[in-house]
Image (cartoon, rainbow, N blue to C red):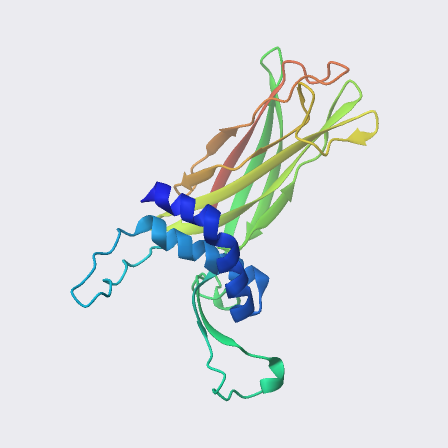
Length: 245
């Protein structure tokens, strides 16, 4: 059925999208609905015909949403004879949209968590030097962080990012994003790579932390810069979080 669904999508997604655009009046919602139509087809078995010539109903569809996300799952065009309030708005259809949010609401969540971050630089001779950040924040909200610039032979490295903490039983789950970029000759890198050189990197680990536990994340090594700066240097992030309220 997957191959049939792919063929149908290639042939019919444009007319389906145009129809849903007219019905919904919103291109973004229409595209979400178009994908949902073909997603249902790819996940459902071909229905068997009944004696009356009709087909059996399709299977339910499971959706995976992150908190803050929503997606339309169905749309019903309104009959021209239906009278709606505020008709000047041009309402032409009703839509069912499913969304997920954290609970409790942020304004009602009094919990507080403290997080220690260490940026550890290991030099070629095996010695280490580092920086420490101590941050307080709420659960389910992104907390940004910025380390001081690291320099070597006239070049500089910047490490920054954000993390979001949630609770699972007695443990914490951290969705961490760490970014790094190279600054050389007064120019900061904006591309991931230039030729064979990696100028910037991004890692997105998901960590499970026991209260007070220190977890280390090794960062990918950047290619040596044009000046040879940071040759043989490696970097890692160490993390520790605990709920304090």
